[in-house]
Length: 165
Length: 189
Image (cartoon, rainbow over all chains, first blue to last red; front, top):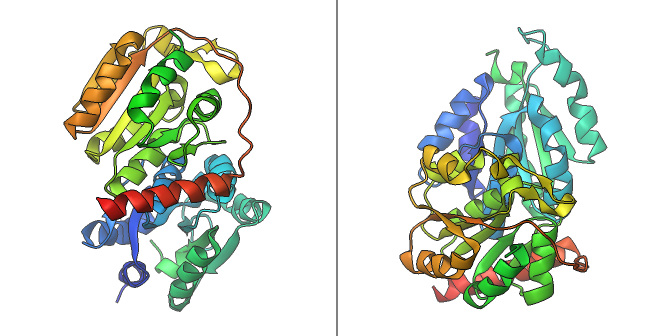
């Protein structure tokens, strides 16, 4: 079974019913899986902070939200993560493709990879790094932890985890 | 009429509805004139009132009104295609279009110049877009609430602000009491 399918299965097992996505090549399989999963409402967003707004609304409507996005966008979500998601105690698992790590083919992706963990650390967001495909085994407990704590968490998924791209 | 005049006239019509209110003066004015647990005040994050409102409307059954502004819509213009393509017939987006960034000192926005938000919304695929004058806001809102159709209202008015106190609630308190109303409304629907 592909890691994309395992991710979608984990979302379903954890009753995640509202997912917003902004595309990345590495995330194509999981985005397709989310779109085809009947128990998940998939609302693609045009920008990551917009998606976090959608997720805030879904949370207040009683649904468990999740955003799927690329690490390059982390900077533009800084204000939203701080003054919406964190300030109002909202849970938000962020499944993030960690572009620019070992195995990357596009040099410019390394520029935001250098800042990714530092930005998350600056926001004091609990961060998990999936490097091996078997790291997927932790996703259930990370999702559970996120909704329990009512905070954003980051799951960084690098090229090695996806088996290249 | 300025924004606070419109809100004052709208309050008897929208007071019982779920409202996601834009950051800054709109939230402070609504809070001063009609503080309700059914009001979600945005204390930060300019631009996301429409996104929060849409996410909420798509996730439960009660009607949701986002009170937004022209400046905030321009900040998050990508919201309009998302709204257009994810229809929630329990959602009303009410844009107070005073052609200025009111909360920061009435600097002009482009909607006071050549840009028409109603035309942008229609071009994005929104089906029910109504541009009205401030004096028509109450009737247009009543019709939108009765229609059970997702509606985008662009309400043109003059720029200007009234003195208002800041909102002292802690953000999780605003969220908690709002979610209690959401739950109660969905229980009875």
